[in-house]
Length: 256
Image 1 (spheres, rainbow, N blue to C red):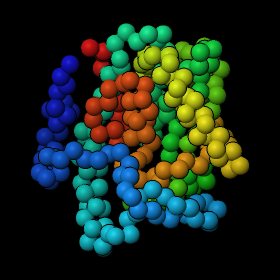
Image 2: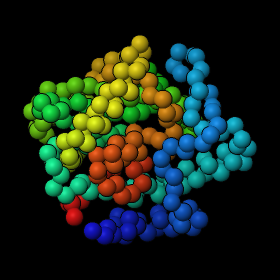
Image 3: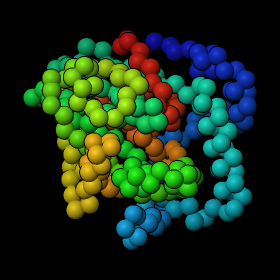
């Protein structure tokens, strides 16, 4: 199925024109840039750990250019940032998956083979786990490589939208339901559970989100945020993700 161009689909030709031509012609590396260098990332306890990819080689001009591109890109995405999700057609042993749009961020709810649900989210450690919602914390999360977190919470079934809404203790704008292969859902859930268990000594429950936060090894950046991580997880489930996946704006397309 061929999707309409984003600029035409959202009626934002003027916003698209504001994006530099060179930026539009290139495929922007929305996933985390895994360079060979290592960078130190300071966590919420004040200790340092080695992050992935070093920016030490960047000059002030490089930093200014990157910040400018980020601002232009965010302005463009504010009107045209829809990401399209196309689930697989007729997956064997179909299993429900819920993409929960909370407005500023997104979480993913997987269903177990027993019919219960597990909610996962990714984000900036200081902003969510430490609840440091000051402006400087938000700016740091946008322009710097900051410590990140994987959050998890088990929810009782059955896996239905109305039941899920009743179980969630945080605001919800939209819930998108998809069906994927059960084996893929089990594989991703095992992967995320193992990663979450690695940080058990630093588990932190935050009641306002009703989530248990654990450290995640990848630094949080504007190109590796809650939406892009959801996009990565969905691709592991066999869902085709078309679009930037930089902001929480999703639309589900029917399978081919």
